Amino acid sequence: MINISRGQAIAVAFICLMGLAFAIPNALPRNTLEKIPGWLPSQTFNLGLDLQGGIHLLYSVDLRDVVKDRMQDVRKQVRRAFRSADYRVKYQRLRATDRQVSFRLVDPSQEDTARQALREVIADLGGSANALTGASAHYEFDFDGGRGTMRLTDTGRTALASRTVDQAIEILRQRIDPTGAIDPIIQAQGDDRILIQVPGEKDPESLRRKIGTTAKMTFHLLHPSLDGTQTAEAPPGYFLVASKDGYRERYLLVEEVALDGQHIVDASQSFQDGRPVVAFRFDTAGARQFCKITQANIEKPFAIVLDNEVISAPVIQSAICGGSGIITGRFTIQSANELALLLRAGALPAPLSIEEQRQVGAELGQDSIDAGKIACIIGLILVIVFVVMAYGRFGLFANVALLTNLVLIAAALSLLQATLTLPGIAGIVLTIGMAVDANVLIFERIREEIRAGRTPLSAIDTGYRRALTTIIDSNLTTFIAALLLFLFGSGPVQGFGVTLSIGLATSMFTAIMVTRLLVVGWWRRSRPQSLPI
Image (cartoon, one colour):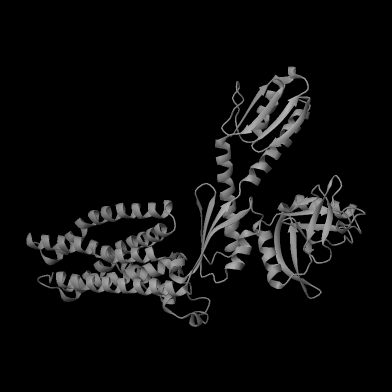
């Protein structure tokens, strides 16, 4: 352990210098960072909601529409299965209500055939029906005197809710942080709630618009002769929709969706004749459908409906087969950008309703930062004084490693673009105390070897070699605990786990490599007869 090659020394020095380079931007003002050349490190770690202020929101997910839509899908699949050539089940009164689909068999003798068809439906829905009862984890069905019912079980509803919340979280993350620079906290709470914390956000209304808009887009053809303002009720096959484009109060649209907005794969704000518009692009299937629709409906209006409002109803001038188009309307640049962002992220699978909103001021965050700084400085001073008093010159080496450890922690947070929270500062304070623990083990072992009569060189070599196993064991167990806090914790717990995990990794490096480099360099220069420890 006493022998350090030139390559090892260069590697340790390189890591320390790179750590310093990545840590320095955190101490520079924002205007200075903007002037740094692109080839130099300029990343800084993010501050959490509790340190820089921001918005705290709690939303509930309305699962009623999700369950309703799912049962409508089940109804369509049951109808398709009954009408297929394999079964040809005669039925009537096929209806979807709340959490079940009901129907009546015209010929009760077809019950066994209907059972087979329903088992196929369950298999298509991702389940496996019991051969006798027809039940699965998510769906079950039964018959009573020719009347059949297929129900969504409690387990199925829970699974549907979980998938809906997970999908909503992913879409919200794309809406709130499309570039990945904000690092918001978006996580499920319970079965049907989503917690959102956005550090640094100053405009709660803009944030709520991004979050609360379902952004369900559909394309519809209009009634050939009737204007929505000229009729009080829609005829069969049509429905009335409020207008947002400012040209009409209402539109009378064909109820059947001509094209679903789920086929949109990209959208961006653009300009046409100097006015803001939204340019969009379809996937292959959507482009093919769009081409057919525009070919068949030239010189007819085509309504674009967003969340049950017509935002634009342009007249089709010619066939559009390139897979792209534009949405015109009374947009500002900001509203066009917001709509493009919503279309890129996709529609929310269920409506969200706000239950709680809090705004954390930057002043409170600054107070937390100041308190954290004071705690770190006091802890650092006390540790430095104690180590110097206990181990003399060797204590100075340990303190150099401790300061290097703090630099490496800041560099790692910057490099990973991690978020520093108030519990994260607590993790750094704890790391300051634990960082010298490895050096204490080494120095105490060296003292024992000196008392056993070993020479200074032998005592140093044996102290580092025999303490290494203990250092790895003690730090590894704590590192595993910190990693579990990060992986399975949430919010503040994750912030604590991040800094503690990074601090343990960097403290092992500084204790084993940096202090050893300093001790060995000092011994080679002075060749002491006794060790000042």
